[in-house]
Length: 167
Image 1 (cartoon, rainbow, N blue to C red):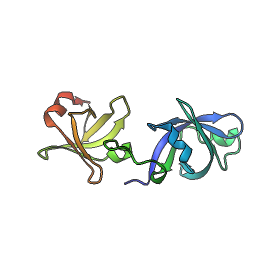
Image 2 (cartoon, rainbow, N blue to C red; image 1 turned 180 degrees about the vertical axis):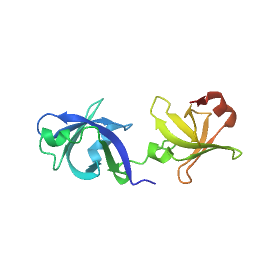
Image 3 (cartoon, rainbow, N blue to C red; image 1 turned 45 degrees about the vertical axis):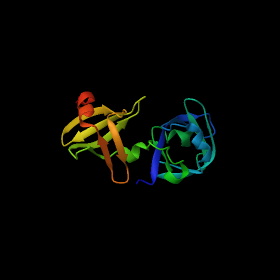
């Protein structure tokens, strides 16, 4: 499993003292209260303060003292160590753990592997098999089991074929 998880993207500097505004990719933005360190563009920063509202996370980071320094982070992904995040509830997974999973039917028929996850009310899984790409919703009845340890996602073949959209 990957040691770091992307939790957002830097949108812009916030004010003149180096605070950054981050678009969150978390189900619960209140988790940021526990972050001690983040990584942006390969550099690690100590979190001096973190606050949030319904649409954004705001970080003050060590070494980012003014608007110009914050501007250099615009558009970059914000990552945290997995150990700083709570374990997902049963039946929920971090997107990074789903990507790369082999998709198979209950009988072991292979359909490809998950290349991407598009966040939505019901996440949309992008399935890639060689050059073929298709998508399907991660809905009950389609996905029967997720085994992130063995990188396998088991689906109901009949249901999958009903909702699969070819690209």
